[in-house]
Image (cartoon, rainbow, N blue to C red; front, side, top):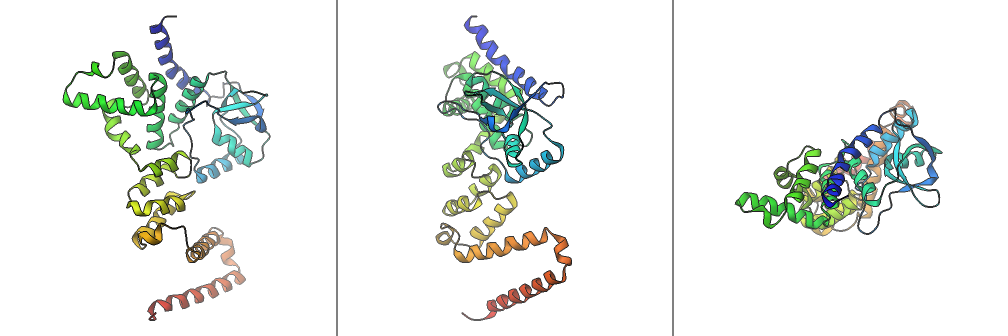
Length: 324
């Protein structure tokens, strides 16, 4: 096989992998039941890593409930590992839910794949997920371009900016990129309904978040939507917001920002929650739990206790009007 044929074969992997991953949703695909304990996350060498790093706790709970009621409707994609284990290429959320539900087996499609193809398949599966954020999608596409162009992630970013700037200035592209590389870029972006100029102008700026915020997203500590919200806040508040936004929903993060940025000060917001803040947070969370169980509110003993709490809170409110 000559070099051109090999390059064409590599580019054809993308539509083929897209088709295969889409077919996993079909009942016609034959799967096998693999023990939950025989599965591990995708293992990749060096700086290669799978695209999904953040698992939204609320979506995990919804998926767990769906699996509890209906079982696994779509098999996961795995490849053989050593010692009779299997690496998960696509479907780690489902596997995590099955672990939490103490299930014994999960339906799986087994495919032998190289590290590069496994990562490619994992990225494509991630891109085909309608729920991923723009940040996750952008990073996944850049990772896919990195694989196909045999360049580092940062080199791909720099190259795309160079191409856009060259076109804006009307200079010759051949000085920075050859036709084969440009064809690969256009082909991959087109597979996911994007064009080079709009991708560079509208998507890549999302990656210009503060380094600490991007790191928190990549480490799975911060959701992409919360990362964008925190990045908009003054820098002196960001460290405290990152520390306290871990595991929080978007609405909870918005409330956190209001409590710290709007009513707080940089000196107090940079520290972790004080004991007083922890107490108020506990009270707030407990009231939320009670409201989620409306049947409790019909019990006379519960109503009596809540009435007592209400009186205590009114006493605290009266302190606002007293001079300190």
